Image (cartoon, rainbow, N blue to C red):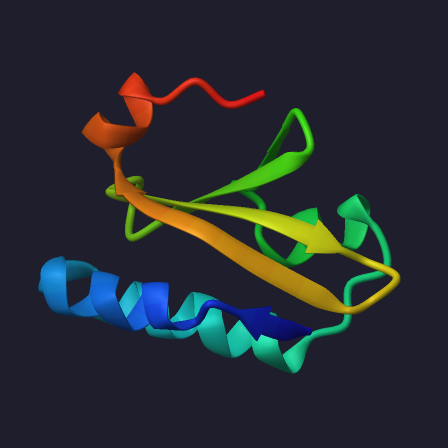
Length: 94
């Protein structure tokens, strides 16, 4: 998949150093994969949930959330936000 706004991953790695390895692993898997459906995405990332039209990935032992739009046909993942668990609890996704 083509990961767009990967800058948000790098910024999160700097801000939340304890999750840097988990963020790297997520990025490597996402970039190396081709997902054609939510089922395939879920097989690679068992903790992902679909919330409205966005996908929420739990990363780093439930410490961070990557909120993204996934365009399966285009082969793209658009990272919208990388949030801590506490920040995510305050966000309303639709």
